[in-house]
Length: 171
Image (cartoon, rainbow, N blue to C red; front, side, top):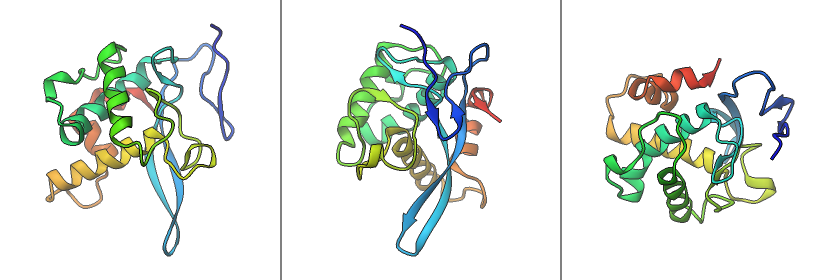
């Protein structure tokens, strides 16, 4: 299987000769009062069974799942893989469970985390799974620590919990 470059806007998701990295993107979305912008962690290529599974993307997804799964899926913390970047069957299972749990909100529900290209999945009203993961991580941090320092965000808090995430995200 050859690795073809995927595009999101003008940025390539796979650069030959370079280690592919997750990145921080800005999402513009509609609100009741117009538009707003928010930062989120995006993967560079598909994570899941038969996906590209770049180590940095896998590590970021593992860290986010490790935060979200115990709270949203009632999975024990030790059932979630540690954020190492090594892809395994447990991660596939947790991605599928997360998507099934959020099937009203995310698309597609096929056990893969795709790079987000805009807010919704190819014009549907459903979100990319990676966007919903970011939302849930932000919500969990906010609800679990109401004394969070003003101005911090879910990305900084995720890096604080799992410092290796910082190395997986392109600057």
